[in-house]
Amino acid sequence: MDRRARAKPSPAIVVAVMALVAALAGTAIAGPTATTSVSKKQTKKIAKKQANKAVDNLIPIGALDLSEIVTEEESTTINNNQQATLTPTCNEDQTALSGGGKFNDAPLNLNNLDIQAMHKDQNGWKTIFSNRSGTNNRTVTAYVYCLTG
Image 1 (cartoon, one colour):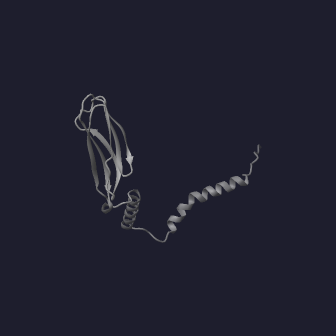
Image 2 (image 1 turned 180 degrees about the vertical axis):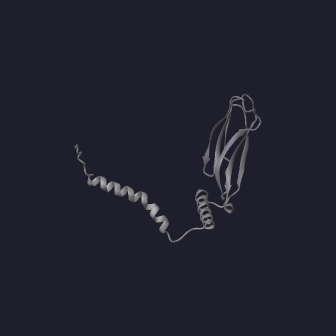
Image 3 (image 1 turned 120 degrees about the vertical axis):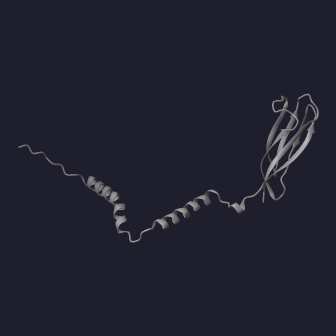
């Protein structure tokens, strides 16, 4: 008769199997012994409350806190081979958000009309225009978007 020697499991394997069983059974054991239950109505109420909390964290201001955005502009005329720097500013109770500039009387693809720089400057928006088009009296406008409140 051929007897095969049976190896005993190592203590590490025994502990690992016990930990696995405890981990898998942990939530199953807690379910049936729970003393309180939650109704469908309570579940919806809790879910709605959690969803509102999540939205409040994403959007920290409410509808009453929203402010108006207004545009402030400044315009001038530039002759040929000249530059102009315009910096429209927001009022003291406003905050500059963004801005830009445009040539009012020129098509978009006209060469040698440049807007060289646009950036926030204090509570306004600084824009530098250049006219090298060969034509005098080009009207330019710089604008800033201001958040009120």
